Amino acid sequence: MVAPRRRASVTQTLADACVTSGPHAPEGEERFVSGSHESTTTVPLGSPEMNRNPQPTYREMRESAAVMPVVDSLVVVSRRSDVEEVFRRPDVFSSNMSAVDLQNVRPLIPLQIDPPEHKKYRRILDPLFAPRQMARLEEPVAQLVNDLIDGFDGRDEIDFATEFSIPLPSQVFLTLLGLPLDELPRFLAMKDGIIRPEHVTGTVRQSETAQAHQREAARSIYAYFDEILDERQAKGRDDLLTTFLHSEVDGHRLTREDILDICFLFLIAGLDTVTASLDCMFAYLAQHPERRRQLVEDPGLVPAAVEELLRWESPVMMVSRVAMDDTELDGCPIRRGDHVSVLIGSANTDDSEFGDGDEVRFDRDPNRHLAFGGGIHRCLGSHLARQELRVTLREGHRRIPDYSIKPGHTLDYTTGIRSIYHFPMVLGQP
Image (cartoon, rainbow, N blue to C red; front, side, top):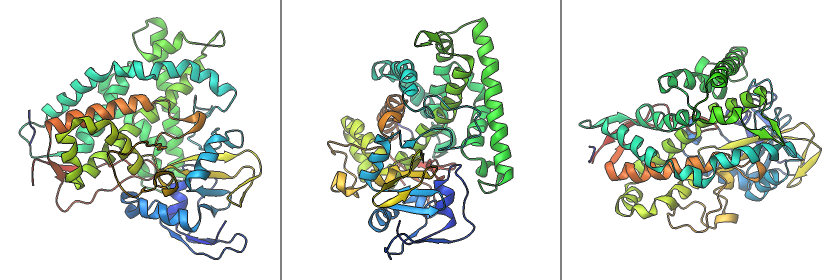
């Protein structure tokens, strides 16, 4: 209750998981041979079981085929050192439009812009999401957390996803952009249409049905923000959209297309990743009451717990890059144009960095996790995400010290970004 190139046998799901919108996915099982390596690894990456408990598969991949060709022109990277190398070399491993096809018509800013142009956009955007700016959100986020929890009063069970982890970060994000909260269902439909068209359409990601839905979602995002920007042009507000209209790059105002490309990225990122992080963290704590009790008894542990759960759960399992030149990683040849899927979750549990990567420790220090990526494309909204997560874990456990997953229910996580669409949570002690 609420209180006040190795040989590998790879399944279809691996390609589906790694190719957010890559060159193609295989039909059935494929086998790959590189050099004289003869080890065989079964990697059900993207399967429901793996999405719930990915760490054992990550370890298997690092030990058996840390840089692994999956299908023609797709390579998966799982070892920490190789992941960091990919992040350090944007000139070779690019984040441009061909890395991930989201049916956008221009590069998303700043994600799909590489150096040297990338830096000028970050000079505008980074100060807007700096720690000092995000610290101002502590009180309004805490108020929102408590308002949502107030709505649970007298209830023994909620759907954590639909009643908390989706509305909380969505309302924070929409308020920053100055968008109407009552249109949240529309924004979520746009976002899911881009990130998970296969889920929306009930088809495989590479089907024409899914791709057509994704194209329509992209068109609707451009059209929506174009109309909103017309309104802000006529009458500004105290929000980010109005700020963008008056922002400059090297003495030149951001163009309408620049702002649309920023807004496209903000919509699909701002409405998904913090939600996934909340899902992962509260699911973990619901299943580990001893860890939850630590936070209830000592709220001072919350900041470190947020970092450790970001590391362990890695809500964003992977990111994609495209090779700009022929190169190699760990002896595995990578050709120009190959897609490289970087397993952040695997890098975050690699013993070479953490020593005891398979243990969850709220006293871990230092904690150099890569949950927000690395290199120049490190997540723009990381400080906002941290602020929301810290406030939520602090206030949430102050108000609801005991909770659990509904008996008999198995949580299903989405692939790539580990959200949970249905999360029946029992409030109070079982």
